[in-house]
Length: 113
Image (tube, rainbow, N blue to C red):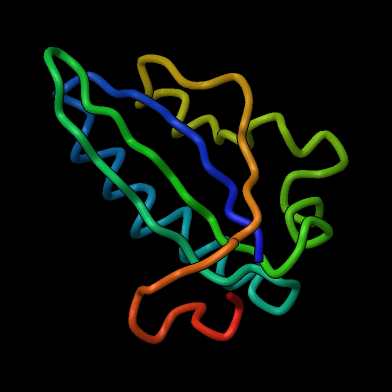
């Protein structure tokens, strides 16, 4: 299992709109399009600090090949829609990918230790 981790920041005034966009538009679209091809779901973290709100997206995939099906061969480059770019004040230029090594979240990943 692979986790695709990325950071983006919004102005305080755009934070709720960006959160809504991710959870009500982007992630459901990704699930409907890529669910059959190895997309497993997401986690979304949000932290307010100063004049900005940081978002950490963690998208879960069955394999690196599944990630490439979403992001292409240059999968370390973020995939950002025009709508998201309009809401973000800045963002990481690269995405990190991690293999799940262990997990104690009930009902999630225990068999993958």
